[in-house]
Image (tube, each protein chain N blue to C red):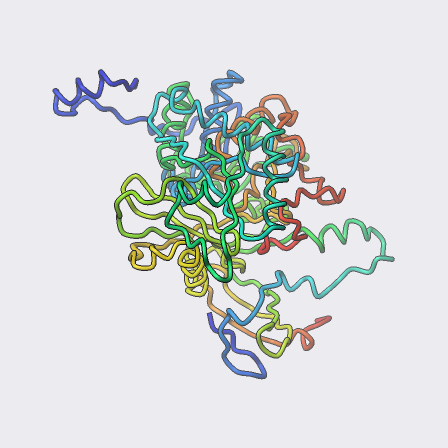
Length: 90
Length: 416
């Protein structure tokens, strides 16, 4: 797979480490109501879709940026690549 | 149908005209006691043990494709019980004991071949870890012994003992481990379940569950509505898809694991050998092909095919361990979808919906677990209580912080 890095252009996926579902960007507040349930959901439960999936890739063998990659898990087609810092909170 | 040496001889004389299909192709009835969603190895084993041990025979196994079309026919066929943690090891040893008696029990030749599993180590600290693992195996009643370099040179002289980066210091040896003809496991369980009255319904995809007041009372399928008192889901890589139909998120990611077969070679590899410094394991099939594999690709996938970097990595590991295979040509590679759980261990449990049960999260270790998974799942479905050897494989271990993390990697599935 080639990941079209927003700053560096197309890079081989093997330069990256896959870090899971992009929902990990939105960490629950430990002081919120039901924070125990929210952290169970955050830490362990996943939608794991067959189809379009937003996920985190860390460019360890490159510029160490965190990317949010929108990818189809059935075809491995990469639909969109963004810097994680640009998507945070959206 | 009963198999015997006499029957084989008799059919040989009659031109093999007397063999019959091993299972019927029934249409689904309106009602069952138990429906098992997923006709793979675990689902068929569950049906068999429900019928044989718990005397429940009004069962349907509904399968999306044809029987044995999933991971039961896509794995690298290894059986072993060389786990460390007390929640895991007794379960896998129970499974290995069931494997040892499987062919007699099912009257079917699944080619259970206990040719040994050898885990190579390359450093002093790795030896210490393997000694500990070996002791855990012995305490569960399994067999294990530590082999030094001299013993290894007799057993597997072709390894690269003097590899300058990963010199071989010895190995942990489980003689009772080995390989099994994987499809034959599905066929054997299907044959015996069918002969006890279980309906195996192929090409019948489960599209939804029938739920009322928090209770499950059947499934909707592509062959119509089927009702039952209990429903057991057992669909491996598709677990999140099936449970997602009723909005249940699982502690599972689906990943692709690749496997490889070389061209057929003369017998060279005596058992199963694993590399301790990278992820590579190999055995030789009865047809002579080297069957090997390594890590999962590491990203969510339902594609049943992987990418080239992992192929390169696995082959590098193989050549580092046994340079002689460098000239063997790769015949075939393929991928299967693994239901990678968050701690690398499986789940056999009830769900929050009554009468709906779940079995999954086997990661890439589901094949060796087939008999015990079926047995323990049958126990849960029949008695509503977990089997003693699977009593820790529960959903609530994640919220309670009692993970069964065999590799100590934390909640990141692609590291298990």
